[in-house]
Length: 220
Image (tube, rainbow, N blue to C red; front, side, top):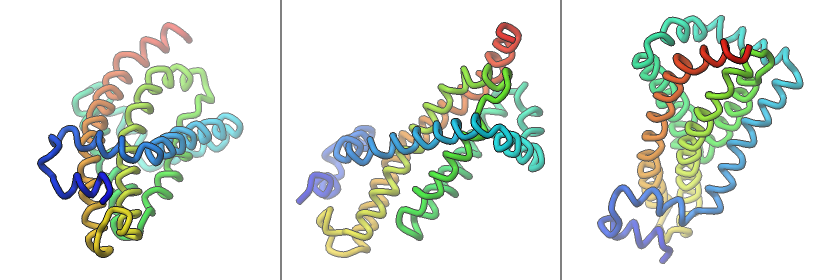
């Protein structure tokens, strides 16, 4: 019986708040690979945006056309509402619609969808102007925090797919049981992921309001 199987069989053996960290520790190699992929793809997209500014300009135009730019400008002066909007987008559109829900139907599909999003986001954030470079200074911490939340969810959907397709890896009798155990791991990893998304949303909202503008005045 593997370690995570024993943990699953004795859910009260480890306090709830420690279980996500235990999952990460037991799957350290996968966690490291997912970190390298998430941050690497984002940085790669940023590099592409710098090399091909027209791609970054096209992404900015798309955000204006779909109303995102106008919504940000309307809310940026009200950080609490702005933080709620950011959190809603990050939880509903990115965490659920992009990573989690597709993976509940097709194993590992959330990994591929996130990879596309990471590259596209990197292109969008590419500092092709002086103002963009200033904004990226505080926003780099936002990227660090939010990507870490998504990495935890990516680890969860990886474990879900692995346990689903290879149930014997966790001592499950069949794929249905493996799916259930993978879903349990995903749910546990979602707890710190949501906490990080809350921190990231608050930091992003307040940093854009109180840091980006002063830095623009100072450095430009």
